[in-house]
Length: 313
Length: 257
Image 1: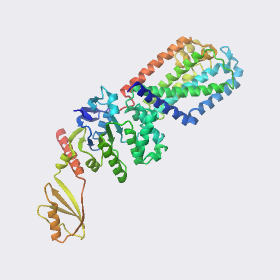
Image 2: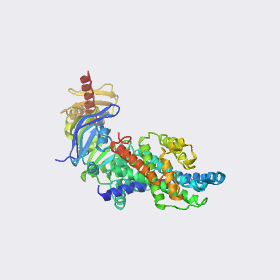
Image 3: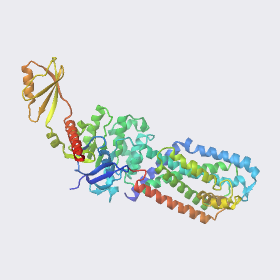
Image 4: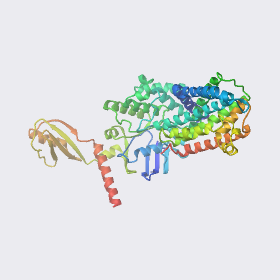
C-alpha cells in the first residue's frame, strides 16, 4: 500500500546539539485527515520542515506518495502543498501575485495560474483583496492566502502547521469547513494545532509527539475511548453552601452556583440529575470542563515526561 | 519537471526580479544615473580637462568605459544581494525551496535579474555619457561579452553575500569595504602604466582590472591587459563562484536549517 506520507526512523539533531527528532516513524494513509499534536518544542514543526525539505534531516527516510525525498525529491514536492506556521510570503507583493508566482515555481503556465488563482481566492474570500499589498491583509486573511498559495498546484497532500493560530472563531470554523470539503474531494491533510477541539472535530487519525518521540499514534475514535474520566460543570439556579452527596459520584462545589461532577467510564449522568432533582436543585445548563482530547493530551504528555525523568534518574 | 516547466519557473523568477527593481526605480535606477553624471561633470569635464590625455585619449573618453563598468558591477551585485537577502529575511525563499524547481533554476533566475539591472543601468549611464563625450565602438562583440560576463560574475558574488548575510548590515559590508576599493583601484580612473612596478603588479591580482580593461578595449581599442587573458580570468571566476553557489544551495548552507 502506498501511503500519502511514510516517515521511517527520522532523526534530526541541530547544529547546537539539540536532538529535535529521535527516530520517529509515522504513516499517513491516502485521503486521511491527520493531526500531529505535541507541546511547544516537541518536534512537530521540525517534522513538517523535513517533509517539506526546509529542514535537512540527520538520518531516516521520508516518502510522499511513494516518492522518496532523497531519490525523487522533485516528484515528492509536486505532491504536497505546505502552509507554514509563520507568514512567509513577500509582504510587498500583491495578493494575486503571491499565488500566481507560486504556481510559476511549479511550472504552471501564467494563463492557467491566473485562472486557478482567481478560483482559489474566490473560494477563500480574498478575491476583493487581490490587488492589495499582502502586508495590508488581516491575520486571518494572511493565513487564507497561504492556504490558497499551497493549493494552487493541486497537491494531493496538504500540510498545515497551526493553520488557525490567531484566527477568530467564525473564521476558524469557515476554514474547518473549507478543509473538510477539500479532504472529502480527496486531498490528504496533515495538520498540527494547539486547538485540540480542532483536531477532535476534523481529524480521523492522530499522532502525539513529545520530546522528539511519537508517544501515541492511533485513530482518533480509539484514542477518545481510552478516556477514563470526564468532568461536567453544572450551572445551578439556586446558590448552595456545600456540594450535594451522591453515592458513587464525586461532586465539587466550585462556587455557590456551580458544581463539578467527575464521571468515570460507564457512569450514568442521569442518576446525578435524578438525585439533584430529588433534592430540589435545578440545573440551568451543563458543559464539559475541558475538551476531552485536551485532558487526554495533557495526561499523555505529563506521563511521558514522568517516564523520561525516571529513565534519566 | 519537464524542460518547459523549468522554463516557466525560471521565467517566473526573472519576471519577479525585473518587476522588483522597476517598481522601486527611484532606489535602483535613478541614484547610479545621478552619481555617474556627477562623475562625468567633475572628473571628466572639470578636472579631466586639466589632466589632459590618458592612454592616448581624452581623460573623459578614458574614464567613461570604466564608469559604465563600475555601474554594471555595483548594480548587478546590489540587485542580487538585496533581493535574495530580503527573500531570505522575509521567509518567502521557502516558496521556492518547497517547490520542485531545481536549485540551479533559482540561481539562474536571480543571476538573470542581477544582469538585467546591471544592463539597464549600464545602458542608462552609457546614454548619459553621450552628453559629455563621443563614444566610438571599437568591437561591439567584446563590449557585449564583457558586460554580460562581468554582470554574471558580480551577480554570483551578490548571491554568495546574501546567503551568508544575517542582517541588513551584512549586505553592505562587502560592497563598502571590498567592492568599492577594488573598483576604484581597478583602473577605472587611471592606466596601471602610471603606477610603480610593485603596485602595477599588485593591481593584476584585482579581478576588476581585467573587466574594466577588456571593456575599455571594446570601446577604445586599448587595454593594459591582453583581452583574451582578461576574458579567461573572468571565465575562471564565473565557474568558481557558480560552483560555490550551487554547493551552498545543494547543502542548504545559510538557507535550510
